[in-house]
Length: 119
Image (cartoon, rainbow, N blue to C red; front, top):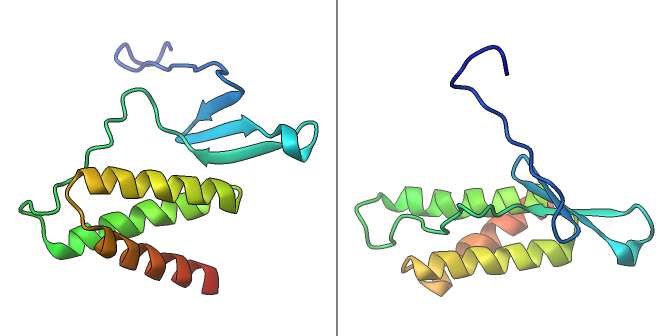
């Protein structure tokens, strides 16, 4: 980079048949044939999985919006229902670690998935 001394670029290589790029993880899909690729959400090594605590000083609307945003991203990014399901399980586990109630999470997830599938 010759434009600015504080600006740098990094390049990640392929690891475990996956290539992380712009928040996506491109994975070789051997079950679908030669040259097939599946896409899912990329979780980098610096990703802590920590969100706002459910009982913290955050408006209820923000907590609902967080779940909706995570589900929406997974729905748009994942290339198959199996990958989408795995990503939803990761989301639920991360939120449960933050004190979110499973029934609250599931109600928002169901609403978001229904809204996106019916659209």
